[in-house]
Length: 577
Image 1 (cartoon, one colour):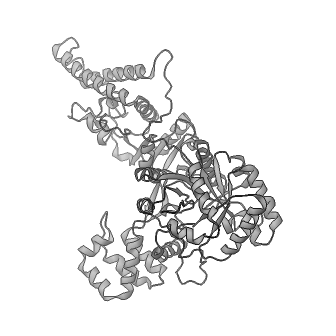
Image 2 (spheres, one colour; image 1 turned 30 degrees about the vertical axis):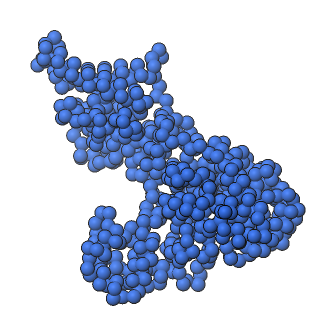
Image 3 (cartoon, rainbow, N blue to C red; image 1 turned 90 degrees about the vertical axis):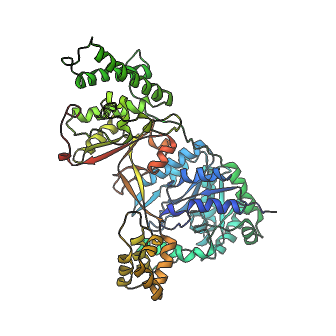
């Protein structure tokens, strides 16, 4: 019979600084080991939340949403305290997103999001807290032999998290862990505080330890054998089976039982597949759908006047009547589908900022991609291509049989695009508009250089390996060795090159860092943190939501792609002046 246990503290590759776990492999391995639930607690972010949530549910696992956070240490700025928060419900999820956001926007120091303890205590509703073991505030005081202070601090946490604060026990063979476990159990008995076991997971299997260490060394810009490099991890930090955890905590079985109890207490319904759009102001006396139809037909009238001047096509002629009927029927067909799918607001928002751009002399492209197949978009002056004249299909853009958010790719002058983004932020609220995060990965040519440097190999060796990999979009290490016989011969003949290659294969494709989508903008119907946490630069600029474009669309937000082009690329014409 499987021993009940749930992993409640785990870093995936999205922790960026130290995780190696790929989400698909994580979910399949957890299911294979017959664990009923799983928490993802990446460091100060929810980057992987949507992917994790959908994958876990698809595998029959209960996904638990959480994050490892750093708290300001008033005694030592350089060594903040660790705290893990898990969301119990919608309130907890919202508080977690706001706390993570506040850490980045108001507490960021040297690339870390640092939270003030008071912020956490003020927004503790709906959250379960794990003490952080030897790295937490209580644990540090226990290890420094300040037992009474630790007891007093625990009382503060219990007040802020009534029956929701757990002393975390970790046994991964690292310094002071066992001492912290014994002292924490003593404190738990004295105060009636529940304990819970975690394995502080960083990789899936024990044999992944050195790949993980290499990833950490790459991030730190240091060699693995550098004596100045801090050794913070052990080979025990893998996704242990319930049986392994039961053997490890045979003396404290309640620590395992509590992991299951916590999992039962955490049930967050992440709303996916719904549509969340900001309100577009509609004239009094009209519904949104009525206004949407009227503005589209009025716009089509203007377009037809331009395409078919009355001097050439008298309005009472049969020829013009046939043209008008053809366009109106197509327009009504599209309007019915757009309204049926719930997207009028999206079109109105796009229409609004494109018209603002044109009114303020920001060159706008005529339209590209599947959106150019929409007559509604043409009538509303979102695009400047007549889809009927060019035989473009609306169904490529929107199809009720394949429900997905519409996505207009809009080209703006590269020198003035930011003015349009500022307008959108002013129009719909600075706390409701931001750009979108992207994730960079360890690509083929770069990862061999990185691994060579981390392994302390000569620069020339990593450089040679990298140059033997073909320069081609989408190139992978496996493709490269198939295509380049010289590369295979070099690896076969050189033992050091072979070791670099073997490790590079393990790390290739791992998420390495964040960037900003060049033109991706998201608009929330309320404040952004009702839906996702935020990320920003250390000076507070460069605001981004922590979900990438695909995850935003999965959640049903309105995302817009503001592409750029050089101003010389635009010719002013009927629809662009």
